[in-house]
Image (tube, rainbow, N blue to C red; front, top):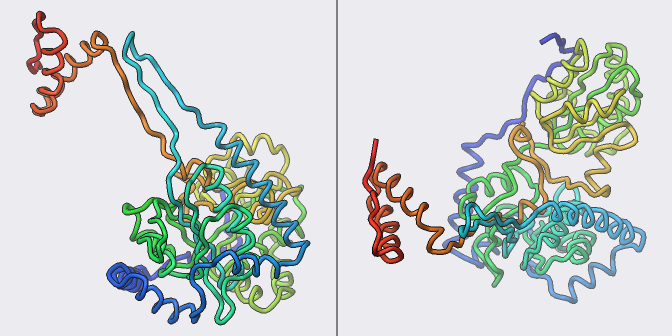
Length: 435
């Protein structure tokens, strides 16, 4: 493949899985055996919080009252966009019936999970948008019980805007508990909560590992790593906007990769020249994260043509993929592997992260090669059913008996035999295994 690395990453995102896994497994085991008391003990240790764990109506109202009116309006705007897009997604799910042959009908139904546990980060940043994305989508899917947990701040509790957003979007219970202990509380049904059927939402490496360990006992949205973003840009792109967009995503964390793939060396060089100044202009914490991410994980790749650019992007399978290039329809039709796609400089990953309507819980670490992001589909199960007349069951029973015997599964064969014997007592059937 004809491409050149103008900047290559010294590191790639990785987790010390042995250390993290052992720590998380110990906490989960302690909480499963120790129940509420153990969860509270870990909350006091890690959250440094000993206030109310389950928010009541008065606590929710007090939090909402503390949210400025303009922010409430912004949350309502974002909620409406996410809700309407989720409703459109749900409309694409169809219950189906098919008469496979006369008298034998097959079907599928789409059924929502009963209980969803939504994790909303609240540590370094207050992820208001994560509450909107997870709760709204679960609500539209038809989930009966929606539980939110979010890390409280010492002596304060959950950030008021997170509480307000979760409540407005339809959360049934809000739990002031973060980290592994919050995930465990939702999974094991502590504090009189219903046990979660599925866990969704972003979190740090400990939250991600807890979801990984618990997967199977509960469903999860996806295995998540550090957030990542890739920009495809040609010579028509605005270097300042490209650089700004790269920096905006690098601030997520010290190990959040950002990649620029371009066919223009002049653009690449100008972007690399602009990025350090844009990072220096950020507030302290954001600056430290973005500087480390750009230094250690960022890459700038020069490609011979747009097909090589697209192939490179598909190889990286980014969580967020932006195209700032000519002929956007070509890119839309060509690109295959991404969590969410942002076409043209008129949109940006930040829009999707916060307010435009598409979900921001997306596959990371190249998982976009095989899965999409959070949607109503993640909260729903497609289940099948069948019904038949006695006459219609005859050929199916005959085929089932013979296939089962050929496989050596005599019990299965006899389940077909008894129906043939009951429904058609005067007929003879050849139900032996055959070559």
